[in-house]
Image (cartoon, rainbow, N blue to C red; front, side, top):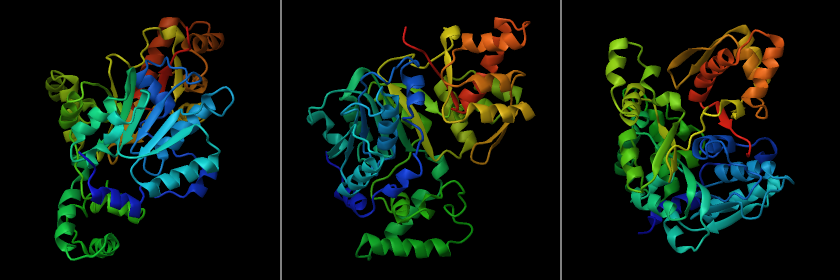
Length: 418
């Protein structure tokens, strides 16, 4: 089975997402999956040392966000700041996209990337050495057989390796697929994709207020550029998934579904506080609860999740004294200053407001979560400030603090080598 020619032509004409290599001087684009602290937490129990050899594949790498993020973070984690040759392998069928990511890497001076052209469906025949980690974002849902695509990825995954996957979510994309069908009917006589883009822009300006796509506030990708519009509304091969359908897809590969990100989105308690309803909900399996939460929220336009060949790969507090809390991207001092003013953390899940209560020591704990101190060291510092503080009381407060920030995917755990 091969990729549809229309898909390849689309990404040659409109490399996705739209990126300017010159912007690498301004910022590093980060996200989920594939942040090193995040994948270490969810796939390697927090025990992976990234200064040691680590091979990552970005399958269907597009214009390079995951490739650049992984390569830069792996270089930063190396002893000399350069990384190791072949640490990250980029694979994509679009030569136009590859040109962009190569230019981005050159702007950053990254030399730890191997660039390959082709489809991820070719992976079983490429004689590549197996990978510790595979990133595949926004690709499987554009294949005529996502199951075959996932099996192809699995064929080059190490026995103790894992994957970070993103696929579209069905409920948060309400209106997208009727709009795609409408445009297929309306643009049948267009001679080029560029002409379809112009027609689509014209139509979007004329949509009635009752149109389901027009009423969906979560899908705004098409406003960024023509590449985003084409990918959203003019794609020739596109589908979305529910939690239950993701479970079936994963089962077809023989892999384990490790975690959805952010975890708080997939918990019924996030949306329902009624004790009787929760009693019924908590009788369901964790996956069934996630499926119910998805329906309750109805705003998830994509799903990010981690897969592994093994079970029980998430870092936990079973060795609490040695656990090192790591903020994924937040700055400890800034969080600490904010928590001094209030121990209620306010957040928003695409239109769903959250008010999360934190324990008394939250500001002091946050300040010391620098990614270097373990909990024993943090406790020692706090006990110097309050000699009455007992380990058990501290640990309980940390667990409450950790539960809130980990559910939001802000705080993760790692462990030093034994």
